[in-house]
Length: 451
Image (cartoon, rainbow, N blue to C red):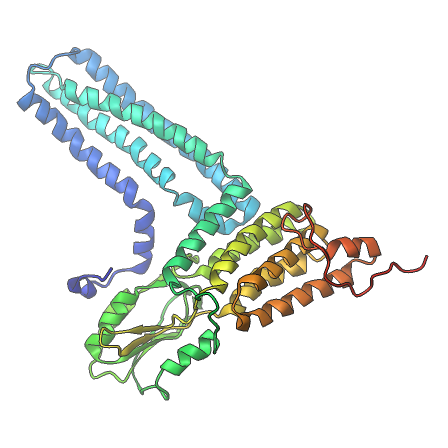
């Protein structure tokens, strides 16, 4: 969706935007509760002046009890939630803590609990001030409904936090990765379609070389920042207005040191205000998945290699991580990855940005797990099944890197398993790791060594 033109003139602070996503839902509840806390008693006095269900003393005591109880309850519940989330994230990878805190259930629960407290606090003031005229029983009824909603959100929150099992966490990260892949890489290979050139070469063929001269640059200054995402629609509009080409130098996920050139404006007839360019670049302190499917792979690989550490020694978790990586690599391998170009409606190239190719994704998903899991029969078997399955669905031109990785896995098996029977078992391809093995196509040594 394109931003309205007037929004381009606002020099947004990208870090504030990132924080706003976390606190927007609770703040909305707080604002609504404050307004309703004043509005509902007024409606009660004006429209329903004779709605008497309970007396002033009972209403005041009830609202005061709910108000004081909810603030203590909110503090206790979220202290417990933050401890559980921190414990769970450090068990898998500490980089997951931010995603768990951004869960919609956590944000809505914080909003409902805080909103209930603020509403009852405001409503109680009307009971104490105007008790001689009428009691805002409508506000009392609404407060009781909010308590009920808080109870429901509490149960939902407990269910969500206690579901921090490794399978649920892996599925959550995998789902975020699948969403980004579906959004960024929309073109699939048709049945039987071949890839005449690599995606990178295909993209370069569309770019007029040499590039126009640089007319303006956006330079990062200050403390290091990680590129979270670019607002591509905004950059496209700016490039069209300047009648030039914006060349992005760093992909999402890269860390910018002081003095780094983030992007160049080339061949432009007009300059762009630096504030407009900065508003299109969102920086932060931790990577996100929004425009960076590599980070979804990174998180899953981190969980796998942590499980493979000698202190934990949990190869089954690594196999579960490979299940998610298998699906993500299938999706990436069957799509065109040459998405580093944005064109205007007239077909003119206006934005260039760097993108990973197929081998980048494959190396990220396989290398470290192959290295740290080389001594695990279960991991080696699952890796071979993953790579062999990829060979069945990929275009022919993408098969060569997969075949090289399959050979490297077999070399690792030969190197780490001295016993013939262990080596024989590790050379099986098995989607469950230690479940249903497939026939071995070829072994370097089919006979056991002489005793």
